[in-house]
Amino acid sequence: MLKVFSTAASLTLGLGLLSADQAYAWGAIGHEAVGYIAMEFLGPKTLSFVQSSLGSTYDRSLGVAATWADDVRSEKAYAWSANLHFVDAEDNPPSSCSVSESRDCGNGQCILTAIANYTTRVVETSLSAMQRQEALKFLVSYLLIIVNLSIHWQFIGDIGQPLHVEADEVGGNDIDVTCAGSRTNLHSVWDSGIINRLLSANYKNSVTVWADALISRIQTGDFRSLTSQWLSCTSTTEPARRRELFATRTKTIEEDLKAFLNRNVSDAEDIIQRAITPLECPLVWAKESNAFDCSIVFSYTSFSDLCTSAYYTNSVPVIEEQIAKQGYRLAAWLNVLFDGSTMLP
Ligand SMILES: *[C@@H]1O[C@H](CO)[C@@H](O)[C@H](O)[C@H]1NC(C)=O
Ligand SMILES: *[C@@H]1O[C@H](CO)[C@@H](O)[C@H](O)[C@H]1NC(C)=O
Ligand SMILES: *[C@@H]1O[C@H](CO)[C@@H](O)[C@H](O)[C@H]1NC(C)=O
Image 1: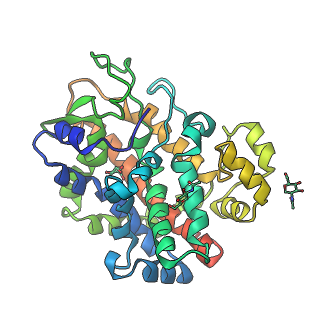
Image 2: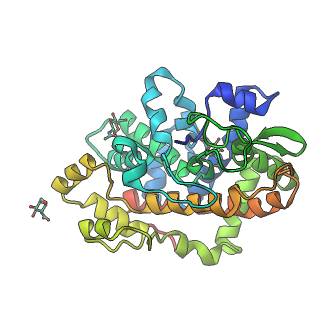
Image 3: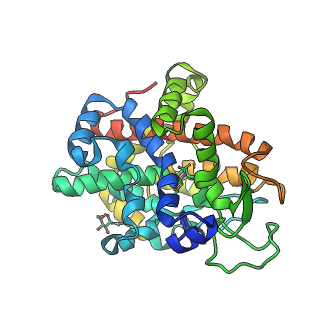
C-alpha cells in the first residue's frame, strides 16, 4: 500500500524542524508549476471556462487551483477524497515496477476512477457551476498526481532498510536519507527537497520563474521535439483482454477522451462494476512514472547525500521533464473537453 502524502504528523517527524504547514507549502511547488505551464497552452474556449469557473478566488489560474485536492483532503467534508490520491501499486521496486488497475485500484475507488468521474462531470452542463468548478479542481489535481513519482512507491522490507516496516508506514516516509546535510526521508526528497534546492540554485526561488523556463523549453527549446510523444499514450504492456474489450487502439489523448465521452453507456456501467475505467492515458502515465522507481528513485547509495550527489543531478532532468510534460498534457486534456481537440502540436 502506498500513499501520496503522509499525515501531517508523520511528515513533521520526517522533516524534523519544519512545521507541517511549511512542509506543505514547499511540497506544493511541483503542482503549482504544472498548473502555470498548462495555462500557457489552453485553447480559447478552455481558457474562458477555466478563468470564469475558477474566478478571482483562484486568481483565474490552474497554478493556484492545482493544489486544491491536497488542501482539502484533511478537511472533514472531503475526507472521502483522500482515498483517491493514490494507486495502491503492489509492485516491488527497485527490482520490479508495475501498475495494474484491476490489482491496484481498490474497489474501483482510486485516482484512475476519480479522473474518469471528474472528466465526465466537468463537461456535464446539468451540474451547477459550483459542482463543475469542484470537478475541474479535482480533475486538475488528480491529473497532476498521476505522474507524481512519489505516489507509486511502495515500501517493502527488502529495499535496504535495516528495520522491518509495518504496512502502513509506506511511500518512502520511513526511508531515512540526507538532503543537503539535513536528515529527512526519501519521500520528502522527491516532494520538495530536490525541487527546493533546484529553485534556489537556478530559478530565484520562484515557481513562476521555473514554470516560465519550462514553458520556453517546450515552445522553442529541447522539449519541443518531444511534445507529440507526450500526447501519445499507447501502451505496449496493456493486457490484450482490455484492448479487445474496448476494441480501441488508443493512440492519443484526443482519441482516448473522445472514445470515453462517446462510449456506450451500458458498457460504462459494466466498467464501473469491474473497477476498470475505459480511459487509457492516465494508466499509461502512471506506469511511466512508476518505472522511474526502478530506474532512479530507489537507486541511491546508502549514506550519500541525495541532494548534493549524482543522485541530485540525475533526478533534476526527470523532475523537470515530468512537470513540463504533465502541464502540457493537462492543457491538451482540457482542450479536448472544451475546444474539441488538443489544439497542440
Ligand atoms: C507530489 O505530490 C505531493 C503531495 O501531493 C506534492 O507535495 C509534491 O509537490 C508532488 N511532487 C511533484 C514533483 O509534483
Ligand atoms: C463522482 O464525483 C462525485 C462528486 O464529487 C462523487 O459524489 C461521486 O461519488 C463520484 N463517483 C464515483 C463513481 O467516484
Ligand atoms: C451497447 O452495449 C450493449 C451491451 O453490451 C450492446 O447490446 C449494444 O449493441 C451496444 N450499442 C452500441 C451502439 O454499440
